[in-house]
Image (cartoon, rainbow, N blue to C red; front, side, top):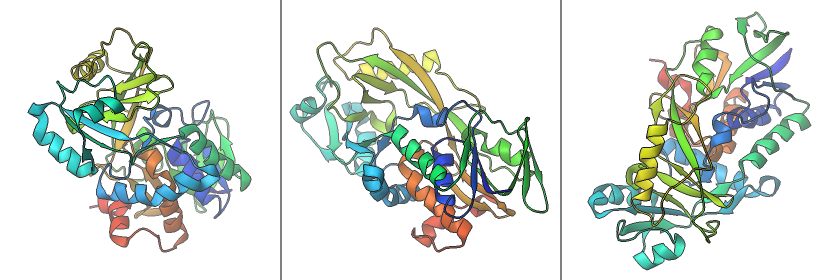
Length: 359
């Protein structure tokens, strides 16, 4: 009998497993061969505290200290830029206000992102309050914390059945059966399927595809110091990545839970939007991929015990904010499970718990 059986080995599962490991025995199950295989392994890995819903921003602010200091910190400076054509002024003004960016001149913009065509995109905003997240280090730090507390991580372990018992839960993996006092549902795009297996009402989460292309750096240029750059209304974005550029059309097409792949046409359309404001022609891709970002109906995270069965705990609906919110989101779940008063303000907590989705 384990105290907490965590289903899912992405950033949601390992972070909440680490927090709960201080409350009892943790066993974490991951179907794939390694941790962080699906959405967590395909993240743009940016930490920006004015990104997302107010409740998401609150979690990001509460996560900042952990990101900066725990195990030496996982952040390195990146910066954030927004570039728009004159025809997109309204969306540009909305974005620059929402993200707290400063307007900069064309010359300043080109010094920061040299391939930006400031004739095509003369409206530019920027701030330096955005950082890259060392996602692998963050995952491994949390995994090491689970192990240090005597917990177990089991890759290549698929959940095939879940039954309620008098003492908690029995989980069938096909090779053995595991007993647990509490199930923690951190299965990403599969969270509603896990809930249904356990006889718990699903929340109506929707996985949505996000595609990426990795492009060679412009000849003779090193993009390492360039900021991440967005189009207005997040119509596309680009970010330096290990001597290359990753570019996304910022797509959000609904998908069933699956090992996602990029849609060629969607990717081509996004790359065209990127090219339209750059002195850069996309002639080849080094690689492309897609991940599923999973959203609750109100696009806020779902954190804490289910109101109909408190022995079933949600760590779900990260919607692309999983890494930047993980420290505070996992701490909030642990606080709710332990019956402790959360550090986050009560009004924000009410926007995050599954109670709000049980009409």
